[in-house]
Amino acid sequence: MKISAFRIFFNTGAWLVLAFLVLPLLVVVPVSLTDTSYIGMPKEHLSLQHYESYFTSPEWLHATWTSIWVGLAVAAAATVLGTAFSIGCWFISSRAATIARWVLITPILVPPVVQSLGFYRFWVKLDLIDTYFGVILAHTLLALPYVSISVFAALANLDPRIPQAARSLGASVWQTVVEVIVPAVRPGMLTGAVFAFIVSFDEIVGVLFLTVRRVNTLPKVIWEGIQENIDPTIASVSTFLVIISLVATAIVALRRKTA
Image 1 (cartoon, one colour):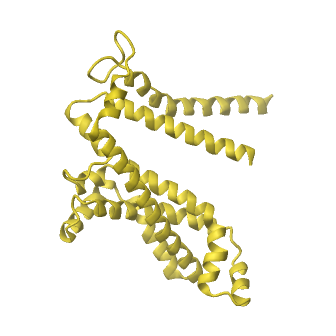
Image 2 (cartoon, rainbow, N blue to C red; image 1 turned 90 degrees about the horizontal axis):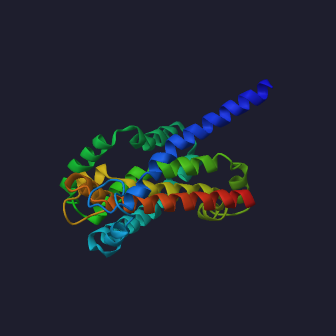
Image 3 (tube, helix red, strand yellow; image 1 turned 60 degrees about the vertical axis):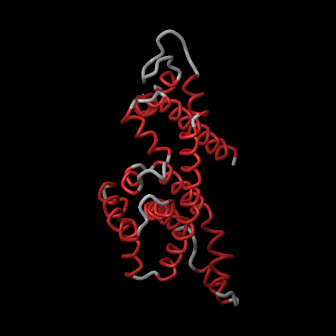
């Protein structure tokens, strides 16, 4: 009886926490169907006018595609650099490598405003303000810690004797990395790439510091919509993002269940 009571208590608490996290996200769904020109619940009837505004607005569509391709570029660059860094530190296994790992992780601990201010001062000198390359470079630096953590977690499960055996059988360092280590850490690389894309796609503070008019990402346009006229199209975009997140989570959960 005591075990059942504890189980019921923890199950109830888990569902309450889940509801606390998810229900505020679902509020944007009826708001996106409002028939008013401002953010609020529908008054007379449900309307798809704000979804139509999103799909017919060059500004919104351009910002969406910009965020997608910038995120993909950041994911690719951060995955390559973060994986190379992690494998190098794993090979060295020295105190200097440990210090380097902690230094790479520090951007996670620094407030975004401080990071963005540092990027701004340095990017001004490099003439990278309001350029796509400047945004991609900044987002890559922000995403590197997430990739390195994921790859290090995968490397922790790799027996060091396996690469040593490959080297003793005549494989070069490059062959050992490409044919032995990379396949072993591929799940960590994929996880890091997903996190890198999400970090880039969701980044707003750095974009506000590093861009002016030429580069417009989706979070920046959403921020401007909130600041200027509180456009209900923001709720439509948010609904799309919530649906995509839920579908992606469901697919991953089903794949793990069937695996």
